[in-house]
Each structure stands twice: as C-alpha cells, then as structure tokens.
Image (cartoon, rainbow, N blue to C red):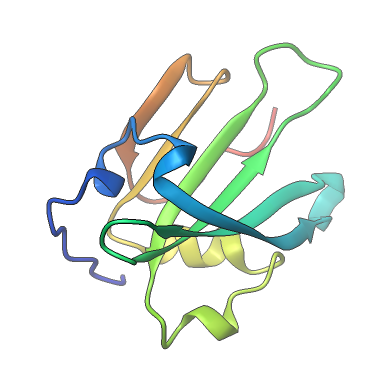
Length: 116
C-alpha cells in the first residue's frame, strides 16, 4: 500500500472542484469496454499531482463515477490509462464521487467500484 501524506491543502478535500486544478488528458482506458477518461490534475496551490479516473455508462442513468489519487512526480511517468485503476487501488486513500454514489466526494480506499 502506498502511503500518501495529507498536507491540509484544499485539493485534498473530497468536495474540491476542477477550478482548483490544471488538467491534462492522459488517455482512455478501453479495458473491458469501459472507455474511462484518465487525466492528470495538478493543484494550483500545493502543486501536488493527481490521477483522475472517470467512467460513465451512457445507457444507464446515475452510472457516472470518478476517483482521484495523489501520485508522486517519481511515479507519474509509469502511470498509463490502463494501469491507473491498479495504482489508485494501491493507495492508502483516494477521493471518489459521482452520480453513481450520489455524492460530490468522499474518502475511500481499496477496490474501485467500476462495474454496473
């Protein structure tokens, strides 16, 4: 399990918004037909780097869900759309939310709930 220290920055709050980050697309995870959007976000305040994983099943209402976890600058080059889930599941904490959870954000750890 990868330990992530909390600094108390606003980006660590589950309800932080996209305006607090600079975002760039990493790619699409097509594993098992998910077509999940994977992006890199950098906090404008503390400069920490986050991996964001978003998946939505268009045929099903309230299926959208996202997960975000901090990644070190050292580990960042190894993250791909295809291994982002494995990385997030290895963290001692991440943030998640979306219409599937009826939540704007919560803390979590362990396995990501990606299936319908």
